[in-house]
Image (cartoon, rainbow, N blue to C red):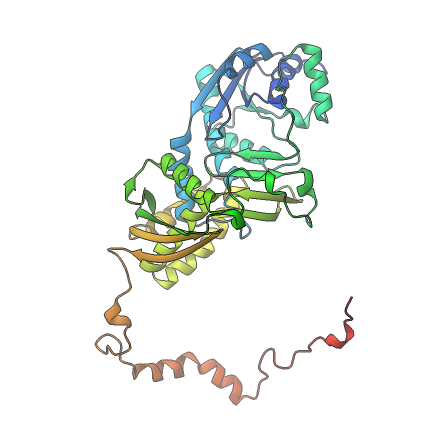
Length: 420
């Protein structure tokens, strides 16, 4: 492939693994450009020591590392919690929510070093390529994007190892996991390997953050989480910084087998994929936040917020974090979160989260209003007229002798089904 002359300096999202190590050399060979490596620390727990030497040995001119854990928790995870967004009923968007932040820093580093392009190691079949590139488009569309997996002839780990060996590129010598994993402060995902079969139960040794519920402690643990305007601020009375708070709940939830999700999801690019997610702290936070909202928000706001959360989740999953609609939804969420201040008490037991208490200075619940004997606020005799008006369409339908939906529908003849 002839060298491409239109890229002079590129910033590569770099992990130090096999793929990004050979991408450094591939970019230099095929684009004739200088390569600056960028590593984002979003709580993935990977060893960063020695990464600069490895990047330089692979052909990069320098390595830039940003510690983004607090920004990740404060500006991305917590807004996600406040929105209540869950993708396809189960996925708490752990990988999705980190991508716009990483791409944002890629753009910033490109500006700092005077690069005219960014590069990433996302494949042409996945969602991440979209998430990275939409963020770049939103923040600086002048930057070019290079995606080697959509261009090169490398198709397997063996091809990659051969490429590295031929060029003397240092690559990890550890055995490759049968699973494809992504980890950050919020979660860890598992894909590939045995998970390509949707009927097979995941092996227990696959899990890394959570205990098996059946092996979790036989004694329940109580945890109290405090919120201020929808933002988590304390665990068991101890105020914590955002990243510390998430990390604390990850440990607590993991011990009790909280936060496992096995999901066949719809990828943005059109295919289905099977993945297993572990999000112990996030699952606890989401549950606590919803409990507090049930105490302080009115019915119409809760219902519309649940509706908006579906779109919010879709935008996050699709990489559309920096978009006008996302900004508008944030404004709506912010408008709802003022009274979401208070404390929720949860009982954790063998994979279950059981709400056992909630309190707030903005509670809409009043015992004296709810009691059956109190007539100052609610006169029970008023209910008769309300019921007549509320049920008027049903009465009109009956008076017109119209059929009641469902009563005349055909039912299956179960006698036709034989037992195995």
